[in-house]
Length: 250
Image (tube, rainbow, N blue to C red):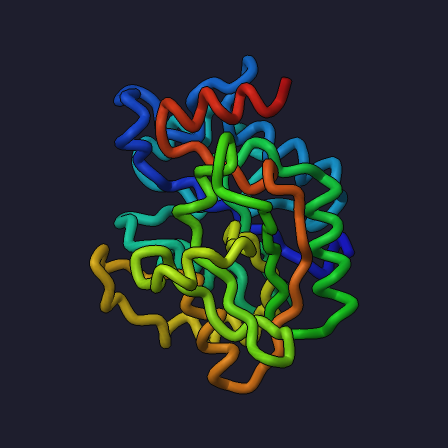
């Protein structure tokens, strides 16, 4: 598994809503060390992949200095969405890895077990895409963050056929309790040949990885899924979310 999967960590976000203008978001302290360090430790413990690739943007030298030489850094000059962030790694990774796993530097509760589970499912199922999913009983209490996640829409055959973003969802679709945390494992050749098909015709004018799920379905490709613990999907975009995630780790 170590050499079959390359992990890419997206870490170029500005963290505008964190009220912290001195540090890149992934270096904001969490439990005594940078947010991203918790994820990088889980990756190391999982044994999946050898040298993670970290996509960095603003204040990139600060991130390199904080994390050191154990990673390959790829610079994303403009933040144009998750799809764009992965596309900047193509020249570095194409032809070097059979599979690409995407994780996020601001998700500190991801466990080594989850990374292993996603990797093992992907290698076993041999699909172009394996994605993590989260099921919740409701969107109350600490689970209210998930209300903003994309809903996973399954066809009559129970296979994933679409991700419906909350802003595009009908009231009925918003009741779907299976949501998309955005953790993916792709067959590399399929990923590289489909990334440039992404379009930015959305309100943010960004290229989203979630659209690859719809693309795979349009091509008649089956998508494998792995259900994960809800708390492992919690990211940090605001000071309130940072406080929530700190509470979840106690």
